[in-house]
Image (cartoon, rainbow, N blue to C red; front, side, top):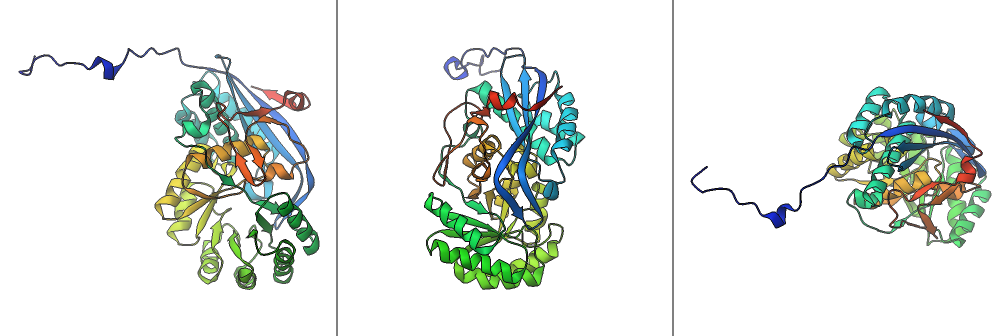
Amino acid sequence: MNAAGPRKVDRQASGPPVRYNPPMRITSVDLFKADIPLKDPFRIAVMEMRCAHSVFVRINTDSGLCGWGESSPFWKLCGETQAIDLAAGADLARFLRDRNPLEIEDRMAELDGFLKHNSQIRAAFDIALHDLLGRAAGLPVYRLLGGSPKPLRTCLTIAIGEAQAMADKAAAAVQRGFGIIKIKLGTNVRDDIRRVETIRAAIGPGPVLRVDANQGWDVPSATAVLGAIQPLGVEYCEQPVPYWNLQALKAVRDRSPVPIVADEAVFDHHDAFKVLSADAADYVNLKLSKSGGIRTAQKAAAVVDAAGKACMIGCMMESRLGLTAAAHLAAAMNHFRFFDLDSAQLLAADPIVGGMRYDKDQVVLDESPGLGAQPDLAFLEKCERITV
């Protein structure tokens, strides 16, 4: 005993003894082949889609709780297809059997270490683990991550097409309450300038315009287009040049009167560090499908913030399941300034129950535990399923 006498314990501060329940255990994983048609063909500079070939992931536990996630393969941008993700997902599921799903850091370190690439199927597992943790805690994921409800104003994307047809779609979107229009470009200087001019004339001066070249230009083309459209009130341009050409990205950024967003050039926090160290972008577009889920997207957002820049949260062609996860992350971190969570607007069907909803161009979350979203059982009955 020291001279001060026996140590006193503040019973009120310490509270009652903590009782630990047996750890939760993953019993199985279900992979669903989810095909969702699009309203119209979706053409960007490097590919075209007519159907969202997603994979829904359900992680089942001995507690009776489960967690849901979604992979939205974009083969040309991320190198994954639905078939690849189903096969890779079965391998990842074997790592999880009999493990504690609430230990997300350990579980995702194991999965990331096993499968270095294939970020889209890894994202589905990461999202499902966060959903499960939120359900177990009785908290929505954004509160679990320390966030709060906040307005998330999404743009609506207009795919590449003939200029007047694109303008008609943009005008219809504005009539439905969307005040931010994102225009897909990246074909050639003349046609791309005409697309932006025609859309601006159709929607008037009020709505915000953004453009996305999806790597479709070289430096001279990007410089010419961006110089011509800057007077039309363009907020920024996403990924003007190929993802691998950091020098070209910096050259465009140095010359452009329009701010530049790095998208395909940034998958994770390592990429964010390289791009921002080179001062090659004004903003960074983070997508859960690129980063491999919430966990790594948080790291990338922190790198962007450390560089004094801001993030946007984007999407591939997710249903409202994957979009809800992205919205939860955006609500949890103040790093995000721009929001592109519109892909569910492009789908011909909505197979999701609960989750985020649209109020014109506002993305709204509620207080449901976890993501608060899951696929409709009637839809799942039509899907091929793999159980591991």
